[in-house]
Structure formats: C-alpha cells, structure tokens
Picture 1: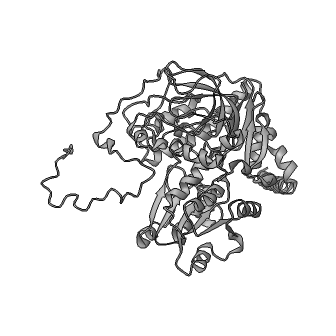
Picture 2: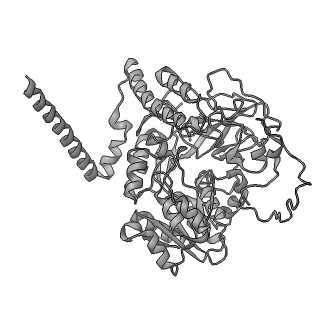
Picture 3: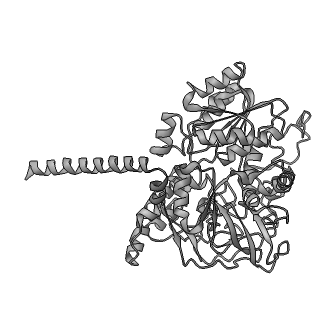
Length: 383
Length: 165
C-alpha cells in the first residue's frame, strides 16, 4: 500500500509497498483511509524534536475511513461502515478510560506512562502506525471509532478526530464564565477552534495573538474575534494588561506549544539548541498575561523533558493551570451535534487538498506556512 | 521502607469536613470514580501477542495490552534505545539517549537505502519543489547563504592547508 515514510529530520517520502496492516488483536479493525490530515503536532515529529521517532514510521493521527476488516471481538462497528477515529487509542476498561480520560489510557502505550497511545506519533505514544496511508490498524475498535452519521460531511468528520475537540477542550478547560475575556495564543487550526469555541462558553471578549497576518485575517472572520500580531506589539503581555484595564485576561489559552516564536531566548534554547523541550513562549505569555487567580489552559504540545516557564508567577498570582490532550471520545457526541446544527463549521478550515503521493510537499507547505495554508488534508488515491 | 496504606481516616479529627465534590478543578475532564485508589486492578483487555521486541517504560510493570507495530529497535540506534529504557521517564538520560538514537537511526536509514541501491531523493523528500513553487525568494536566499557558508569554509580549510604544505 501507499504510506508516508519518515526518513529523518524534515525528510519524508512515500512508500509504495508498505504491507497492508493485519489484525493483531481480537479488538482490532483495519480501516481503509479516505481522508487524513497533517496536524501542527506532526511538525514536532517532522522537525525531529520528539524522542523515539523511528525511521520508517508512518505519521498521521487525524483520519477517517471505511472499515475493511474487524477482529473477532469487535461488535460496535462492521465492515463497510464509515468511521471517525479519535486520535487517542483507548481501551475503555482501565481506570483512566473509566473516568473518561481517554487520552490517558494505560493499556495502549508500553513506552511511556505519561500518555496513552496515539496513532502515528512515535514510540513515545505507543509506536502505532498512523493514518497517512491507504490502510491503518485501529486497536480497541469497540471503543474509539464512531460511525459517521449520514448527514455529516467527510471533511467535517476528519476534523472532529482532533482539532475540533482539542480546540473545544482548550476553551472548556479555561472554565470560561459569562463575560470573561479570553486570550488565545496561536492562530493555527487548534487556536482558531479554541477562539470559536470560547464563545460557546459565554466569553465576553475573545482575542487571538499570532504573527501570521493571513491566519489572523482568517480567524478574525471565522471566529468573530479581535486579532493582534505580536510583532506589531511592543510587548504582548503589557498589551494584554493595557487592554484589560491593567488586570490581565480572565483566561489565557496556549494553542501553540513547542514551535512558538516571539522570544529570542525561548527560540534559541528551545528550537535551535534543543536545550529545553521546545520553545515555551506562548505558555510564558499566557502565565504572565492572565489575571491573578485566572486560568491558563494548555493544549499546545511540548516534549517530555522540561521547559523554561515562569512557575514563580503561577504561584504568586494564584493561577490555575489546566492542560491535557483532548479526550475525543468524551466530546464527540456533543461536537457532532454542534456541527450538524451549524454551530461549528470545521471544514471551512481546510485550505489544501493534497494527494497522498505528494505528502512530502504537504509537510513542507504546512511547516513553512506556504500558500496561506490553514489546514491540509491528504487524500489517498484509493479513496 | 514500605508505606502502609491507611484506609480508615475516622480517627483523624476533622477529616473531610470541608470536602466539596463540586470543588473539582479537573471537572469536566474527569468523571471521577477514584477507581485508582484500588490500584492496578482493572480487568485488563486481552494481551496482544508480544512476538517482537517491545521496549517498555520501567515505570510500569508490563507491556500494555496493545502496542504499535512501527519499526522495532535495530542496529546501533536499537542498542542506544535499549540503554535508554533502563532509565525512567523521569531521567534526562532516558530522553536524551532516545534523541541521540533518533539521529543515529537517520544515518542508518541512509546507509540502508544506499545498500538497497535506492539513493534518497533529498530534494523530493524535503519538499523543496513545493517551497520553490510557493516561496522562491526564501529558497534562493537559503541556497545563497548555504553556498556562501560552504564556500567560506572551503576557502578557510584550503588556506590552512596551504600554510602547512
């Protein structure tokens, strides 16, 4: 089959003869992929920043497809079903899944106890092959995959596997109360969804900060929010204080993670010298920009080692920091309903449809933010 | 020393008098059951056959019930990965060794390709075609700077060599 093949830092090619995956466990399903996305967090892998990313791996944790084959214990889906596959691989039985912490499943990732299994996200997330391929093996098929309702567009469905729930959970974790001022750092797909979803919780003001003008233009129209380019601000934190009557935002959301720009020390130590687990600029600004007693919600992805963050200010200001990988299965029913009712229109974020055969170009376009890309979708030729 | 578990708090004066389930900062992420207080005692899913080398964190007692089939550890990078997994996720040695193994693995990948007679098409693999199509200016700048650096180093090295010969 055709599959994306990681060859090293910023090097990718298409395999033409990767073996089609087989059933390895009674709860497995084999899915024929019809859409897969490149996610901002895939860029951490692409840039070689995630430990234990092995040559020959296939990335991709955002995909939908058709059930091709099922294991003997699978009852909840059948061959031929079109399914949304959450990016979390969750057993549904462990104590964490029981509590709906599906991103923390303890039975899907032997390599790291900090997180559950994730498709196509290195051995740090269980060594599962990803969906940037024609076929993918999906463990625990009774738990994760959900049949796509007839009236749900495939393009909407594929974005419900990660960025919609992640953006929604970012706002949810912010504990937004009616009238709150919410500042979202990052106008990538997740930041855009976080801004959009902040209104659903009753925000009174939503501000997005980024440095890409075309993305700021997009989110301003899409999420009806205020936007600011941090390159045109003397100091983003000072600006937040000024614009909130010198008190700070009620809620700050870090939707950037390890690839953040905007602070020379963070960039050099985090992205160039790899002395910390990525550049924590957005998190630094979030902590310093939120009001005393405010809430910082973190969905940006960081590496497992450590980062320079002003933890002293977390203590001094009495901030609550809430963070987590989205628990997609928990949120899917509600979010599907929001999409069906037109409250959310995720497919408007898709700017590029790229044949799977051109996956290397797709990564380059997304990582360099070429051609005003917001969200690229890969389409296998067999789809 | 092994800690004894203390399940009876009744003798502790004032225990939980102010407990308020609504004061739960993890809500609604967690549908709290406190099942973890019973320890690792859930009914585990069937175990996927461990018929290949699966490294597992030493912060857990076993291999998870399912695991992925992305490439097994192999070669020198595999040896480094095995070394890394002797250390817990808390240790920098664990993560830095894995990052080092990744870089070694990149070189192994190149050697494997060449052994198979498949010379990597670096231009295509790096997506430089897309960069050329959409942002020619930056690419020309990068090529110019790269060429100047390589030429500068070459001139410096040849200058040094001339001093000695």
